[in-house]
Length: 576
Picture 1 (cartoon, rainbow, N blue to C red):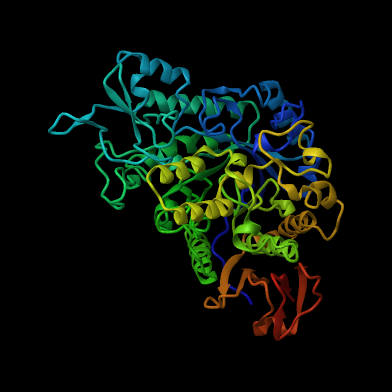
Picture 2 (picture 1 turned 45 degrees about the vertical axis):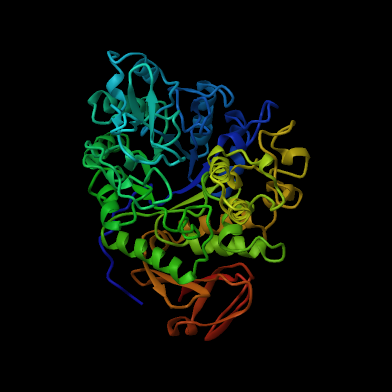
């Protein structure tokens, strides 16, 4: 089949594959139980052999670690448990010698309350840094009761405002109270952020992942949010800050610097679900960001009352989401960031397929196929390349470390939630909690999975003796080897697998996710079964005649007509 393609804007970042590292959990080099930068340096050959092009490191800056590094107290220094600036220089050099690029996490919607800017700001209303943050006077009820300036809820629960007794004003924190929001209306704040970017780009960093970057512009009126949850005092105010009035002005300021350095950028944009809004940030000629992370797929299993309430999703829903983003970006000159896992999401094989021992390897390879041949830049999170799974269902709360998750449970318990509701939250936490992604990397069968010589900051998943890097990296049938094949094919068939047009097939089928990629006369068919039992599916006519199997998780050699897909079967066909 030959189709007319849109003009292709080629770029190095479109052709790249990204490997994400969570520093606390990757590799401990000094025996303190916490991962560190020298530990990452020691495994650079492992990363390079996988076949990725870029390494993205979660925040490693100086931080009190209230939110695992997303509360930064010094943007130009390194958290002492992770290492030093010299260690970062060695990491950058080691990556560049291997032909890999390096991304840092830029967290500039907020700082730590321990940052010198905020320490000065809270010390006096007359501080030169006072208006680097967002301060408002209280509201008072008729009886004189003091209330926050508005009813916005924090992402981590409670009011998004914290009262400062000394000044008699509140400051805004969309996350923990230890993470005060910066006031981007102040040009000095923007200049400071630009200076931070140049500091790292000049040091050899090749780009940034930008944390909740769409939150940097707020409605200056700060109005009350509509009451959408009558059971809580504070309400979701995201309509007033998810795409604020000056967002694109601010992003273009960042984009000018990124363009100057030919740097990579991916923005995290929660609470935005309309492609027409996101294209304003990622359109090729907009000069803002290269791409963004959208949340629709990873929110599929969230219930009506939030992440820790259950929801059963259908494959047709997943198809609708994927098709929306794929087709919109390719027809509007945008670009997708492809992911199923990261430091905030549970393990995909447990969440979207099955980690049952009989099918786990097949399921992990199927999900890799589903994701790995779509249009966009591919992001793989540490351990995903091994098919690592969620924490055991038997784990008690004493093994969990994420304060956000634990606070949700404690708040519902304090509110008098029933045993049934609390038990349900426990079940959903095992399925979706951020801790699932943060268990130590499983390197080998030695004590602590080879992550550390001492007990790690968080327990290792007990399945490490079977599921580890050492057992997979030289096994041609492993999940690791399968990911190597995906990266190799994306390079070998770059035109069709990177720049080709995406088309969804059999949209109403709730068992099989199939799609094509087409570029000129080249066409690839991707078939994945999301079921743990045999499924019949009819091959499109154009593939019955001649088709070469590029990849299969069952080692299938040829196909034709009606085929029977075995549990979690996946295959990729090149039309001849």
